[in-house]
Length: 180
Ligand SMILES: C[S@@+](CC[C@H](N)C(=O)[O-])C[C@H]1O[C@@H](n2cnc3c(N)ncnc32)[C@H](O)[C@@H]1O
Image (tube, rainbow, N blue to C red; front, side, top):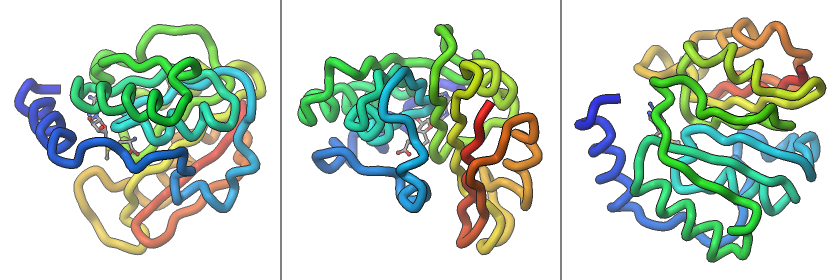
């Protein structure tokens, strides 16, 4: 990512500040929350203010999360601490243009509202056998074409190597939950 783009994210996060207190399941996965693990390790990429990481930690997972914006990462650390879950969350600054951050295989990879097809295979490879991949992004379905929006069927095609547990596209969003 260019320095200018990173600074734009920093500025945006500096303006919005901390996430609202407490864990919150990403809305797009609310209908299937019970399918997510309640133990084990998770990797969240492009974690923003840490809402997904804190939600996973509140379920009982140990979470490694990263984002390219140092401002977002600091907000995420504070959100985890304010939620009493700092001991289960570790945050780092990482640019996904360099691939996934290094690490051991995990029980869950979460990528929420970030789409970069170049790291699809790396996300699959990071899962332990039986591990879950959860991806959600903006979609052209129910919205129309736009930058950063997935094409119809893009996620199910990209992750066809996984067993699909739950997937859909509607109202400008696409989501995929699959098992390795
Ligand atoms: C729409 S936000 C989503 C944040 C978070 N996942 C959520 O759902 O609240 C997209 C995030 O991707 C991060 N991002 C954008 N490009 C990135 C890159 N190359 N590497 C890592 N993070 C990136 C931004 O800093 C931002 O936090």
